[in-house]
Length: 294
Image (cartoon, rainbow, N blue to C red; front, side, top):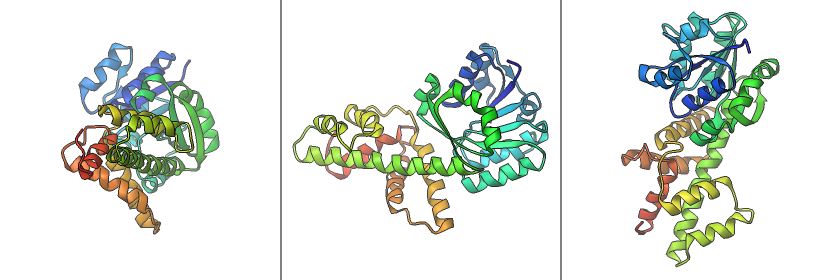
């Protein structure tokens, strides 16, 4: 394989995704704000870049996986950013979850320099990143998507082009709308069961076999039963995603009351100092509001 790949952002999702690209035989150049974040990748054979611009200068495809809209804007547009090094005809793939509106603007800016962009946020959490089973929601040109598809297939299993620039971020926002409300609904159901003297484990087992069954009920429902809230997806990052949902909805005049209620649970969890826990820990709040002990 001669394609050169860059990867910027080596956190809980980026590190295993980059490692999977390396395991598949791709030459990967990495960069992260903290030098120690690059060390495990360097030990596995990656080359370390000195800046996003340096990574872009050595790459045909550059992946970004950072926390929020300002971080992506800095990586692309800032001093030492991708735009200062990217070669004409190269592709920037943003796996972060950020504003759809900002994404469209970034794609246009890159396009002015002959650089293509795909927005490709993911679902599947750390486990999906490690196992290479992430779900990709992709926005951008069809021909660019097909060019990058082999790389997506190394990191994920469910890979869908959702439309033009920004469509991937819109789809991820839809994903978070559904997941947030479903987590809250599962927690409410368990609290309701307990206050009525019914074991929520039995409720979960029964519901999994019907229309109420879902991956949230399966995975997060078990977390709630076990009170195991080690993060697969940290609540503070989930709060950021819901801010994107609510801000975008407000800008477009879209009512999203269910999402707003779910976001308030997440806000309360983070505000209570538990933003590093998995977002399913909102169940702890629901228990407290219902007068239940763990």
